[in-house]
Image 1 (tube, rainbow, N blue to C red):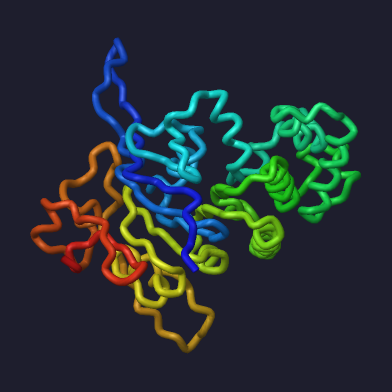
Image 2 (cartoon, rainbow, N blue to C red):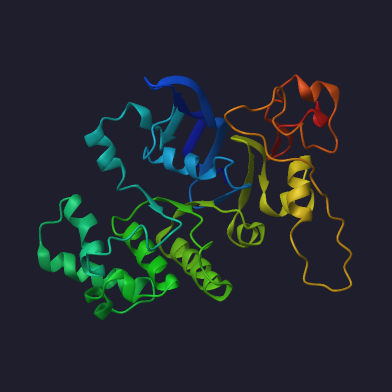
Length: 323
């Protein structure tokens, strides 16, 4: 059975200007995302991992046009997202929602949970107040809370409960795609598993598709069908989850996976220690962005940017080792 693409991203870029001087002239730019391409199929979970500052969250926000891309194309079920007007984009956001990293910062502290969850229905034209209330109670119960929680304020909940409220808000308009931006990174380990299991249950129940952004490789393996690895604004590897974890191809992915602790006292970990710091996205290195820290660096890595290409069926990488 051929998988149907829900979202297609082509050569996506986001450059932020650096301004200086008394007149605020542009003196440079931060290349937060620098040419990312991938496809998310209906019903799957695509994990996106990498170090802090690699461009994961910026990529996720551009998909919903919370940030406008500098270049590139985004197609949702064949619709060119970048050509939509503001009013058309508002309608499109019924189909795609976001769960934010910090559940407390993303919830208005002055509103009750009921009012927070009711707002999406008001924005998208539900005029029947009683129907809105019933849907709010249904949402709360869907994510494992109770209807009486609607009268409480965000500060009266734990971190895990607040993230459930964030998930409920994303579900309110029956989206097809949810961009989850590090949804469990601020939670205790025991609560993380509960939220992850909730996300998987909801995916089965509502046929959801996820872009799951995280830096915890263990969490990503647990929930993802495929995994993409980002470094300095670029995708360096993309593959099915098990294949990537069992046989990584890119030296950066190998180093990341070598740092994941193994719960076995007799297992000897062959840790790959990367030297140097991550280069600044305001002044990225020439050639391969990873060459300044790569243990397998070659001369051409310093001058030539590797193409992101398929080296095995369904397994993509950007590395000169496979030229």
